[in-house]
Amino acid sequence: MTSAAILTAAGSGTRLGRPVPKALVELAGVPLVVRAAQGLAAADCLTSLVVTVPPAEVGTVTALFAGGLVPGTPLTVQVVAGGPTRQASVAAGLSALAQDVDVVLVHDAARCLTPPELVRGVEAAVRGGHRAVVPAVPVTDTVKEVGPADTTGAEPVRGTVERTRLRAVQTPQGFDRLLLEEAHAAGAGRAGDERAAVSDDAGLVEALGEPVWVVPGDERAMKITTPRDLALAHVLLGHEAA
Ligand code: CTP
Ligand code: MG
Image (cartoon, rainbow, N blue to C red; front, side, top):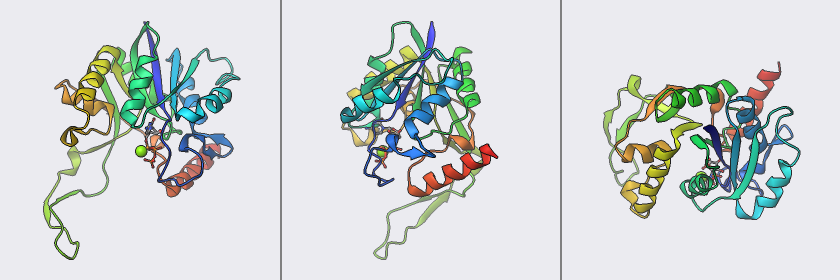
């Protein structure tokens, strides 16, 4: 039995606002999708990687990986067309997994500076018997729940959420393959039901009523969403090099 990752890179990157899909945007000369894949490879606990990309970019990204990922790592890379939503892209990745894969990590290419030790920690937690595992960091802002805005746009505060119990969730999220497949099948059945909309794979598992476990995340696993995030990633890279 082996562990694999689905690297989701099929988004367009609307909020980053570049003319190319976000995964192809370069950070210090290396496309985000390549950096993210190299981080997964360096964790040394995976045997295969399925990368989901915009359908028009399958050829380009396949060529990016043609020379292998990290010299000496035997990770096999398969590039497939993603879908119109992240959930559909993960589903496309799931159907491309090799038969012997029993542990799956789902990772955002946009979290391209995720350190290998975080990847290893999530994989080990799933191997250790936790069937759904998410890395997360404590929330540092005070968080308030609000009601509908009045005519001026001001929103009434309904309450303050107890911060010590809140976590901001990152990727890679790790799963027992059968559980993730079951969660996606159930999620696809609810597609179109706005109330059931979930923004991550763990949410689909929660919707099944199955337990999901949190392990410590890492600030470097931040997601690049806006131009400001890309600038921050440059700074973090500089710190690493120093
Ligand atoms: N993703 C995907 N397929 C989609 C949409 C998103 O594989 N149809 C991936 C993105 O490539 C990204 C990750 O899911 O690595 C997280 O999504 P997000 O940060 O929202 O990226 P984009 O959807 O590309 O950005 P935006 O929402 O600003 O357009
Ligand atoms: Mg998006």
